[in-house]
Structures are given as structure tokens and as C-alpha cells.
Length: 135
Image (cartoon, rainbow, N blue to C red; front, side):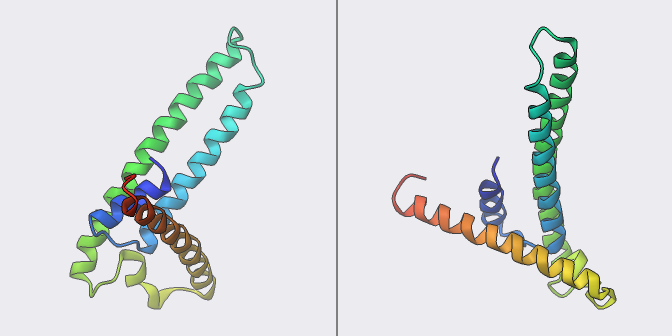
């Protein structure tokens, strides 16, 4: 599942793209980076090398964790929808916004900018594929 597909699913279920969901998307992105690093490490060995087997097992574990993290994004988004309905339309992180420090405010603004850009691009991608019948 790609980020675009995750965004598409979030939109299809009418789940909110809150800061908490964005934090989960960050974790998915970090996991993908870890997998790329493990793949680089794996490329340094031949398949008959014992270290290759160890690293290959680590790669399988990291890929499974990535798959779990992607599903966790959807679970968190569903939880956020319920939370918003009970807390004036605010997600868990946004609900405590009055207690944020200036540093947290800056970090969250950066996160919103980053993930809203990805979400907008994903929506445009899928709108284009839907309108030309390739969906």
C-alpha cells in the first residue's frame, strides 16, 4: 500500500487527516527508510553467506512491521473520527492545542504542511485516474 492509497482509503471512509494520523504516517515513512537501509545492507552479501540470511530475516521482519504500521494508520484515523465526534470536531492532538509549547506548535505546523501536500497530491492523482477510466 502506498501513501496515495492510504490517503484514498482515509478519504473513502471519510476519516479525518488529523495530526495524530499524520504522526502515524511519519512512522510509516520512517519504517520505509529502515527497510531501504536493510536492503542496502543485504546487497553487500551473497545469498550463501550466513550474514545474508540474518539480514534477510531482519528485512522480512521490517516489511511485516511496515504492513502493520500502514493498517495502524487506518485504525488511528477511525479512532480520530470517533474522538472528533465527541470533542467539538478536534482530534486527540488538536484537542490539547492550548497546552502546546511554541516548539510543538512549530513542529505540528511543519507536519501539517508536509502531509497536507502529500494528501493533496494523492487526491489529484486519484481524481485524474478516476476521470479517465483507469481507476
